[in-house]
Length: 464
Image 1 (cartoon, rainbow, N blue to C red):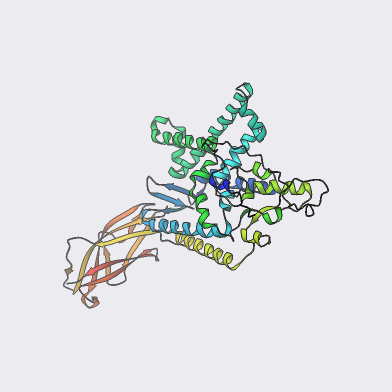
Image 2: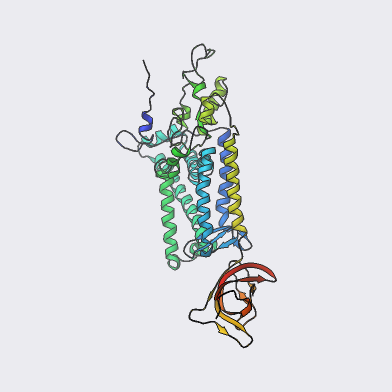
């Protein structure tokens, strides 16, 4: 008789019951090697996040994305709307990076780098364990009547949650408007910065709602990346996986028993991997969209394997292909190497474009309605308008030189641009009639700073 695999877990998410009611998740506090490493990574990333708006490179923030003023600063480099092509390229590179990275390395980003996971599991959940206790104590507290203990613990927890949400809100706002503007909003009366004060309150409410109530629903219902993994992952992708070849058939552990003789696999069916899961899934059912690769189930399973004297790694980072073929560990195959090389190449390309761009951006156009002028010495001149943008945080002095003919600024010999400022003016380009190859021809102007070429700008010269 043919057996049918039970797959009803795929028909619904683990945090909703048959009637559609939310099932609150009470994950057991994880402990183990991977959890310790994640705490270290979380701490490092949180320090970088909260210190970021106040760190300076050449007097500029490390990162600021001021959408309102269309001014962006990345690692001290100022980017203006004229650099938008770089952001378009960055978006394309980002999409390619996500696809290739996920195909090879699975959802490592979700478990180790995603801000939602870092804050939820590394900050808010740990505070909850500290105040309310582990999962059984939390269940008991939620079920009991409201008394002094419950009011005190719930009040303390939510007060701290709101305070942290307020700090996160201020930090994210600092990345948008800059730390100086944020300090003004915080230190000066709210009436003088009403829009900024309202923004802080709105952000605080959103973060508080997400981490205090919405929680894992962000990953399972909202985040598009989790749903994309269904088309991005394949059997060679590295994921948190259960070795069913080794684990099945499951059976409770009995002291001194020979599990191979008893036709039992290494899985002792303790369900601890389910108890520690922050999204409430059973990893033994295979890869699921709710899995954020947080490694809590790996640590839980390893601890049980260690207690019963069996080999660790029943749940581990591995590919479905390796498990099906009875292999173990990450294998550098041709595809993994090729995709990794492409990832490094496109990241290097984008980094190079970001840091090798010119310090100025210039537009030089013929003045509308002005006809070319012939001169007694046989030369022909055209009048042009220029606009030059200084992308740096220092005052610069520029010179213009035409690579064909002669360029002369109107009323000045040099162009001085203030830091992050612009300069506009007019210039003439003179050409000998013998230099002209037709009625209209392209002309290239070179912009110099202290003899150092910065940028070439093309325009058209009209003859007579």
